[in-house]
Length: 196
Length: 112
Image (cartoon, rainbow over all chains, first blue to last red; front, side, top):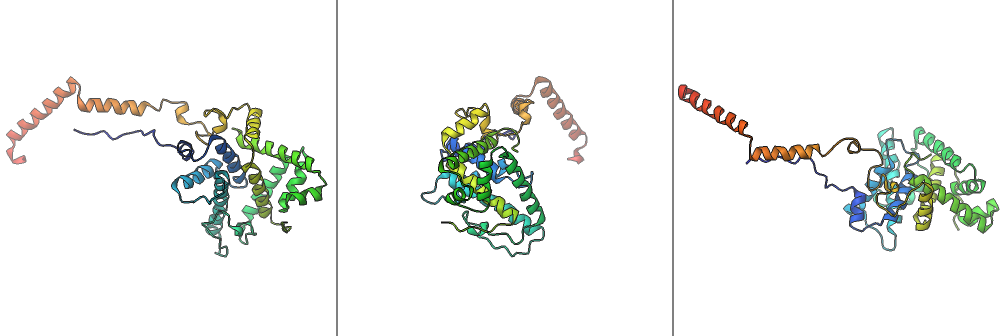
C-alpha cells in the first residue's frame, strides 16, 4: 500500500530544551546564559541575534564539540563558547571583507588570550559599532555615577582594587554599585523587549 | 595584580566591558535573578515564564500563535484514511477507468 510521507514532525527539540531534558543545565543557569548571550550580542549586527548565539553555543555542548574542563562551571564554560562565537563572527567578517590573514588565533580554545589583543585588521564597521555600543551602555547607567566610574575602570582592564583606588569608592559603595549594575544587566537580559 | 592595559581601540574597550559584565553574570545568585525578573513581572520558577522567551521557546511570535498549524497533520490523517479505504464514488470511478482501459486494450491489441 502507498505510504503517505509525514508532513509535520513536532518532536524536534531546540538545543536549550535538549540540555534541560538531559539535565545538563538547569533552568536558572539557562537564564544566566540568556543574559550573558545578550551581553555578547552587543555590538554585533542585528542579523546576528542573541538567540542564535545561545542556541549555537548549546548545540556545541550537546554535540560534544567542546569539552568542559574539570572544575569549570557549566555557565562559565558556555559563556566562554559565547565569547568565542562573537570573536569567530568578527574573524569571519574580517576574512570575507578585506582580511589579509594576519590574525592567527587558536580556533579551538575558548579562553584564547589572543582574543584580548587588539585586532590589527579591525575594520571601520567594527570600530563604529563598538563606539556606538559603548555609548549605549553608558546611557544605560547614566543615572548612576558610581557604576559609570566602575565601567570606566573595567574598560581599561582594571581589577576591583584598582577601580576602588582610582574612583575613591569604599568597599561597601563599590559592592552596592556592582549589585545595581548586575540588577540592570539582568533586567536588560531577561526582558522580552529589545534591550537598550 | 593585573597590569593596566593601554586602551584606545573602541573594540578593545567594548571587549573589556562585555567580558566584565559576563563575569558578573556568571556568578549572579538565583535570588538576584528572581528579583530582576520580579521587576519585569516575571516568575522564572515556571517554565512557561516570559523569562524563557528565546531560550526554551521562541522570542518572537510564531505562525502557530495565530494560525491552526495542526491542519497539515489533520490533512495527512485524512489522506492516509482515504488511501486505505477510498470513498464509494471514487471506488466506482476507479472500476470504470479500469474497465475502459481493458476494453481499449482489446480493441487495439497492437498498443500493448
